[in-house]
Length: 130
Image (cartoon, rainbow, N blue to C red; front, side):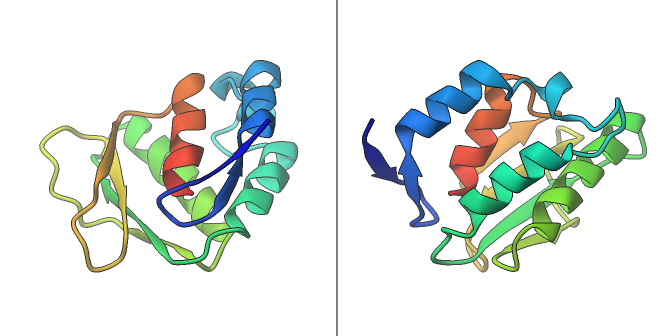
């Protein structure tokens, strides 16, 4: 058990996070019918976490025209659609593409992801948002 506070000042229930990692947070299981979109169950769980955000979070995407770049954009758009406290910019200037970063609006992003977050990396993405 135990609670912690993430960078977005949201309380994080560590026991629940561990359970999600062990049960279903493998990226392949996150997708709805093999499409590039998050499945409804994962969206509901993520939305509940994002409702706890106490300040805005900004996703900054550095994309290319590849299939992985489009998948990343779709994933980030799904996340943004779940909370009005999460915004997306697609004007990132990272050399490594596709990639994205997370930070507070108006500040340089502090957490960077190269490629699509899979498996435990998806859990790291959720914790980075919080």
